[in-house]
Length: 428
Ligand SMILES: Nc1ncnc2c1ncn2[C@@H]1O[C@H](COP(=O)(O)OP(=O)(O)O)[C@@H](O)[C@H]1O
Ligand SMILES: O=C(O)[C@@H](O)C(=O)COP(=O)(O)O
Image (cartoon, rainbow, N blue to C red; front, side, top):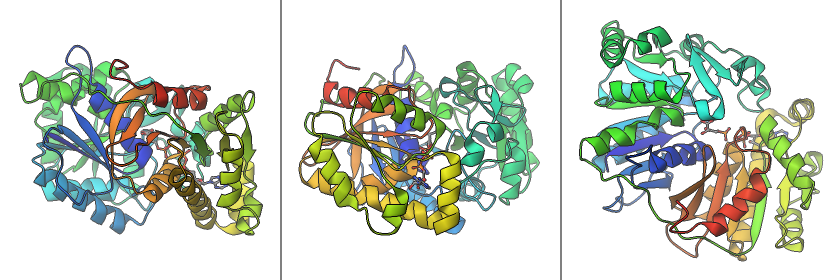
C-alpha cells in the first residue's frame, strides 16, 4: 500500500476513495479500498490506496485523536509512504475540535511540520482564497452551513477556526504564492515549518491549484484536506513507476432497494423534493420517534410495501424545524436517536434481502454502515462528483452509495440506484 487515508466520516471516505480510484487522465488512479473502521487484518496485496473510514468528526477530540492514531499505525504497517487526513470540504468541526487536534497529533507522530490543510473541492463549489472558505459564491458562514445540526460553521476564516481548536500558530500558502510555482510553494511550506507552524492553510480555487499543491507535496509524509487534496497524488506515484494506474472493475449489484436520508442539508432537501415528484417517500415524524411511537419497523414496512419503486424514507427537516426539535430534545439526543433508527432499519432490510442501499448524510451513513457488519468496499463509478458506487468486498453482495449532505444533483437518489445496478466492468 502506497497511499493511506484517514477519513473522519464515511461519506467523506467514499468521496476521497473515489478521487483516488479515478485519478486524472491520462494516468488514472490507484487500486483503492474503503475500509470501515481500522481493519483487524492486513490489506490484500493488490491494494495501492487504503481509505480508513472513521466516525470521528463529531466525537470528543481526545477520542478522535486516539482513533486517528490507531488508523495511522495500521496504514504505516501496510507500508504507506504518504498519509492524508481527510475532513469535510466545508471544514465541519466545532471550536472544540476535531480537525486541529487530529491534524496536530498526526503531524507529531510523523514528526513533520508545515503540513498542508486545504478543504478546497472546486468540482463541488468549495474554494479557499486568502485562507477563507467559500461554497459557491458565498462565504462558508452564509452558505447554509451556519445551520448544520451538529457543527454550525459560523466563521469562514480557516486560520482563525483552527486556532480556536488549540493548534498553535497556523500558516497560510496564499494563492499568489501558489501561482509562483512548485519551488516557491515548497519554500513557503519549509518556512512555515521553520516558524513552528504545524498546519498551513493552502488556498486553492481551481483543480489546477490542487494539482500544483500535490506536486509540491509529492514527498510530504502527511497532507490534510478535503478530497480535492488527493487529486494529484495518484499521478505522483504512477509517474514515479510505483503504481500502474488505470481504474478497477466492479460488478453491478441488483436486488431490492432502499433510500434512507438523515441529512438536513440544503442540497439533500432539494433532492428529496425532486424524488417525491415521481417516487414514494416517507416523512419520518421526529416527535413520534422521540416519543417511541414510530420505530424502525415502520420504515421497514414502508420500504417493503414500495419495493421496486425506489422508496425513500427521510427525517430531514428545514433549519427552523431542526432548531425547534433540538431545543425540545437536545441536539445530541435527536441526532443519536435518528442515527440509531436508520441503522436498525437498514440492518433489518439488509438481513431480509435488500441489496441496494443509498444513504443521505455523513453521520447517517456512518451509523447505517456500522450496523450492517460490512468491513470494506471496492470503489465503482462516480454517480455525481464526490459520490461513487460502493460494492462490498465480501459476503452476500451489497451495493451502496453514501451521499454527503451537500453533494449530488437534484436527481441523485434515483440515479444512484440505477448506477449501483448498472455497474459493470466496462462502466468505468
Ligand atoms: N429532523 C431532524 N432534526 C434534527 N436532527 C436531525 C433531523 N434529521 C436528521 N437529524 C440528524 O442530523 C444529523 C445530520 O448529519 P449528517 O447525516 O452528517 O448529514 P449531512 O451529511 O447533511 O451533514 C444526523 O445526525 C441526523 O440524525
Ligand atoms: O468533503 C466533503 O464535503 C465530503 O466528502 C464530506 O466529508 C461530507 O460530509 P457530510 O456532509 O457529513 O456527508
